[in-house]
Image (cartoon, rainbow, N blue to C red; front, side, top):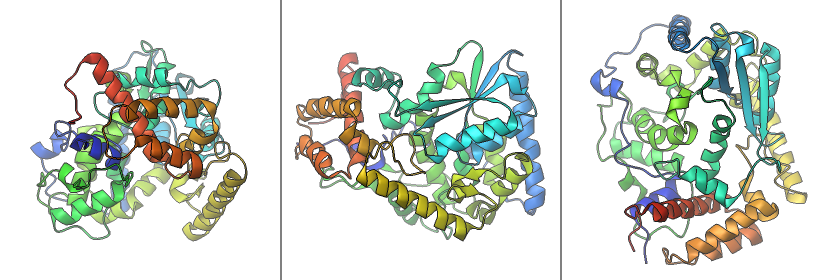
Length: 423
């Protein structure tokens, strides 16, 4: 038996690399950013700020006056910039921020302090709480709303704010496409497509599971040629925008596009950032300048961009403090319960610990892995990976993807869609 390329890609990248989804935004293909701005950071900061306010003003004006504005708020810069910028266009009583994850993590705790500072209502969704529904049937219901294979344990939490809102009176504002402002760019501009592909593979590897086909090579999932010349748009940024954002980040964050406003995907914003000199994106100097300019009230609050310290804090000192907090949390997790002592930078839930010690997650894993085992898709026993994780841990991400795979296959079985698995 062997897995299809779809399953191999899913286990390796954590998402399906769908050729029909892959591609640069149309605005870049129709109007390639052939010339970079020559302005310095202060001038570009002013231009970026004005542009963002223009986009927000237009989108707010197109919505009913009584609209409630929901902003998923993390500990990063993009969503905080969006919040403070939106406050220039919407009354505080019409804005609600929401954070979701595990108590004690930056993404869960920092947003509440930010919301209190600017005076908006804030809601927290504790994903480890018994009040948050975790069951195989709930996850399967969520899976039916998705078009491509994704990590359900990342997609499902992002869907919770939409489930709790009044769809007729509310809109969710997403900071999706933040990678334009910096992100994972190579230290030197890649001069070959192969080099950019290898860098993308290294950065985006989700697992190196032994369940992967022996002949599988992850580069084959990527486009064989760039969309634009390297001197027009860096190859590494092309892969980030054309593959990661399209197949992973976007579908996982924006579950129902009709409920969302995503101003960072506006053609003008995309064009602007693709014309920003690479050095200002690579060292994030421009987005940090925009952050200080817009976030007048909250720039002194901690951020995951600086290891849980304010952005103004010396990065070496912040790293030392952040590393200490992470190691301290890991020590407590090893001695006690990894679910309730997560790393501060943990996204969502410490699923690896949850599968081992939380009865809800363990039940999900046992049922899904057993069902996947019965499909005989792999040369090795899937149940062995589950038993290994229960015994020693360390396979949390792989278990998430195996359960997600089973959920998508169940949905395909129910819908009698052409199978994506070749046996």
